[in-house]
Length: 156
Image 1 (cartoon, rainbow, N blue to C red):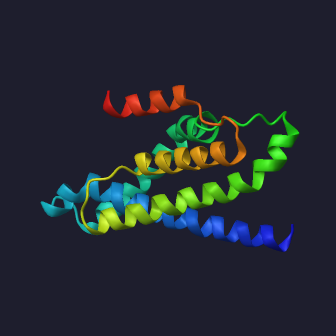
Image 2: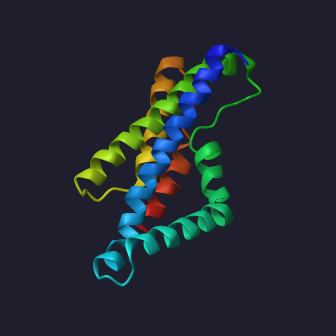
């Protein structure tokens, strides 16, 4: 592995860990706040329950969601080697930036008690990367039908 790719991998792991921490801070507070506030559960009990069920949910139901986010929103023709060569690094850095932007936004919103969705934040970051990539590389990457289905699932 090239030294730069090793650094990119470490940064990616750090950004993903920061995002995961923010998702936990935001979502668990929404789910467990009333139980802890009413003293039905202690903070320690709530954290343990949340950790167990967040893991179970991600393990058993997370693949469908990650497939949509990973393959459905931005569609790259990997058979077009010229396009892949042109955009692969930009996509990699773009996704790191999207995850960092979502994490920072979640930190700010959670700190100030703003109602915010982690899913909306991540999808918004990915669509933003797609828009930049479409303009920069004069290609079509965003599958707007998938984005529409995802957005409609939020309001339906």
